[in-house]
Amino acid sequence: MTAQAGRPSVRGTAPDLFDKFQPLIDQRAALLAGGLTDPFNLVMERVESPTVAICNGRRTILLGTYNYMGMTFDPDVIAAGKQALDEFGSGTTGSRVLNGTYQGHRECEDALREFYAMDHAMVFSTGYQANLGIISTMAGKDDYVILDTDSHASIYDGCGLGNAQIVPFRHNDVEALEKRLKRLPADAGKLVVLEGVYSMLGDIAPLKEMVAVSKEAGAMVLVDEAHSMGFIGEHGRGVAEAQGVIDDVDFIIGTFSKSVGTVGGFCVSNHSKFEILRLVCRPYVFTASLPPSVVATAATSIRKLMSGGAKRTHLLENSKRLHGGLKELGFTLGTDEPQSAIIAVIMPDLERGAAMWEALLHEGLYVNLARPPATPQGMTLLRCSLCAEHSGAQVGEILGMFEAAGRKVGVI
Image (cartoon, rainbow, N blue to C red; front, side, top):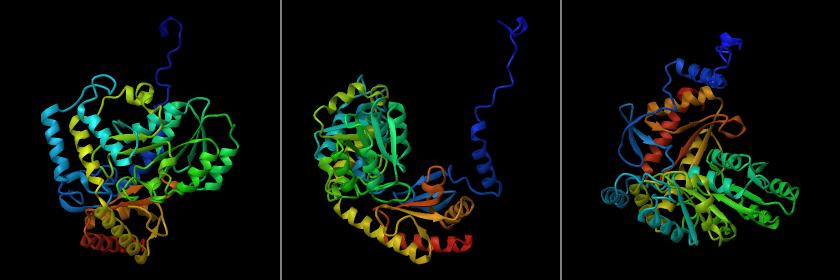
């Protein structure tokens, strides 16, 4: 029926679907009005190494890339990618359960099984999809997902896709987790989701205690080790290894976009029924698989990380020196002591945080500007992620840049 036939037209009365973003649009416009470089749209014109790029025409030290082990320019990694590109082409054009499993995907999963000394490994197209897929598949409508309030967006989205009951508990609070678990039905399916290192503040979870109370309550445990793989633990297997509970964890989720130095995600497990997930996990079944060159670089990088002890030691030294130096300069940091390769510098507000970010960029240093609602407790953070390839001289340069920018902006 047309409007002329008696049905009133509603054209022009419906709200613009962008209206819900108007506060953010206004905030961004206000920040950029004074000529501020857009901190969320920086272009790197050339990348020279894991620690240096050309940004806005000048040499810039990279301190916000999550390239923890500096594998992006490793000669063996690059050679493996080039060879796979030549031999298998640029892409798979299919999902893993159709035509998207190449020899390289199996070799990458073999490398993961060897790295973690586990029975099963499943490679996803991104780390986000790994969380989305495993959580949504394992925890359904009548199940419970118990998670830390500071959990990554992919964890929350995995809960939403699976339609599970979400039970949050206070960040890194073992007692709060135990209380939540005791309130749940004893016969209900329960999945406790934790992270080894939390990406905003760089703090570490008390996994030893949390895994113990979770198992006591009959829950399965998933640990996201995205920001600890390669660096933390004797073999670089993450916080679960470092705290001696890796054998008690049911699933470990990780990503290739941090220490591995490429893109993709994975889940490893010792559960005897794990392989059925390849047929029932929708984000795995219905997504095109990673290009052959990507899984080749990932497999090569993972195998090299197995002997990365010297790099891990150097990265820890860098973290201690930068954390101590920033603290001595008078900056407020996210942790009292260095716990990971992430060091969060807390800013008084978004405006001064953005000004400090630009002042650092002008000095020749790139860091991440993190803002609410992504950050805990409404904080504005300058998030620094160190690399094992940063030299001692570069860490000294970084401290000098922070001091100059901090005094210019009035933060210190």
